[in-house]
Image (cartoon, rainbow, N blue to C red):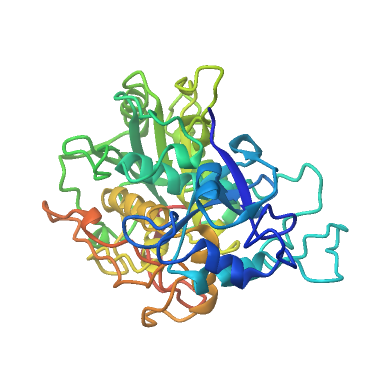
Length: 445
């Protein structure tokens, strides 16, 4: 039987602290009832773990499962909700009643007001996402949360059934997680760099499951012969996982095509800027067009009918730049290096360093810095509250911010999973890190 859910707080919430409680939106007694010291919602780490549901509009809701609601000292309306009603179901954590009450307060509609579309959900959390029938503007928010779920599925750190997945679900052994990265010559107009960039180098490799580290011996790195004289060569990070070959773009394209075609799949391609990557592949002569689908295709909903273990024929595309734009409310880093620096993940290299050799690791660490972390709204709130880089750790809504992650790309024994996931420290506007000024790993637009 698929998992049923009840909405906690917010407009038309299903749960309150007791049957005669009035009003429904009294968040403090509800938080006390849900997050007491012996609550069934407390996980192994002692935090309150609830379900965050995000709809295609982008609106978010707090949920508990039917089993959890039955074990809690609360009254609920008979108004079940199902996983298919949400684009994503993902974990959200609270220290205790006070943290939870703050979140419930953000979900509480403001009295005697309606939003611009006439919808009564005027809550701080959902004011900008509701009221337009069929709106799908919030899909990137749900996709961000699916990345958080995917990370935890790979790591074996999630209660599958609680988040709408089949209780026995596992990624097939043939699943490939692949990295594609390249550098372009920075000179030229924005249009030229977007439509006909001069590609300097290209790298690709596979990621081990479940360690989420680059698989030894899987990476390949090529310098494009036609453009090999461009770029500040002294700042290009050398490739240490294998030989560096300087080849014509057409030959490199053949190597890329062979890499893309390996294995029966399913395949996840992690890229920085899906559109720019597609253009780069075309310029390298790769005939296969890189069009993919959502991570939802790899995270099937639990169902009493149908084949929940069916896997996608199309590859899944993870666009790391899009994830960053989503959590930063539209602010876009121009390269994985810039975003990695903004996330306080130390590459161990100077800010002038560039090249696809290092770019593979940077791309992966940038994704993990976001996917291993707290929910999208909590990450966004941290950015808004901490505009200065290097600010001391503060409360993060879910848990306290630990020290910034660091990695040495040349260290054999480096394991990023030994580090506690962090909320990134923000930095003020402008580019104060990333690639050299005359080269870029991607378009600066």
